[in-house]
Image (tube, rainbow, N blue to C red; front, top):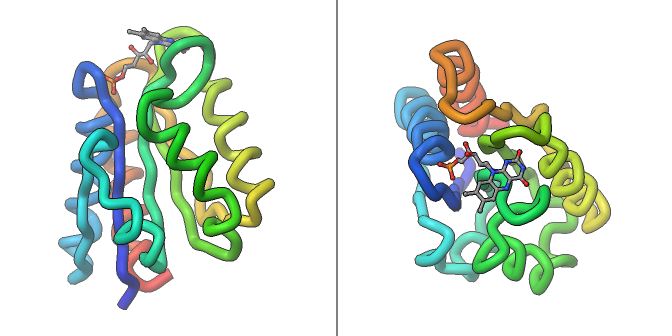
Length: 142
Ligand SMILES: Cc1cc2nc3c(=O)[nH]c(=O)nc-3n(C[C@H](O)[C@H](O)[C@H](O)COP(=O)(O)O)c2cc1C
C-alpha cells in the first residue's frame, strides 16, 4: 500500500472541499493519507511518500500558492523525480491555465503525473467531487 501525503492551499474552502473528496476515496479504499495545509506542511514527510497529492487554487497571476506551495516545489525540484504526483485545484477566471504551468513544472522535475488534474471553476460540482473520490481510491495502490 502506498504511503500518501496530501498538501493543499485553499483561501475560501473550494480546494479544501476537493482535498476532502480525495481523502474520502483513499480511506474508503482502505488506504491512509496524511493531510497538510500548505502553511503547516512537513516537507520531509511529504517527500518521503510514494504518492504526493497537491492542491492549490489559482492565486496572484495564474500561479499556485506563492507563500508555501510554490517555494516548496522550487526548492524540492529534483526530489520529485520519479515520484507519483497528483495535482488538483480551483480557479476563478483563467480556465485553469495555472495548472498547466504547474503540471509542466512538475514534469520538468521528472515527476510522474498519475491522472489528469481535476480543476473546478470556483465551487467544485458534485461530479468533480465524485471524480476526485475515485482518483483517491486509485492512489492507494497505483
Ligand atoms: C488574490 C486572488 C488571486 C486570484 N488569482 C486568480 C488567477 O490568477 N486565475 C484564476 O483563474 N483565478 C484566480 N483567483 C480566483 C480563485 O482561484 C478562485 O476563487 C478559487 O475558487 C479559490 O479557491 P480556494 O477557496 O480553494 O482558494 C484569485 C483569487 C484571489 C483572491
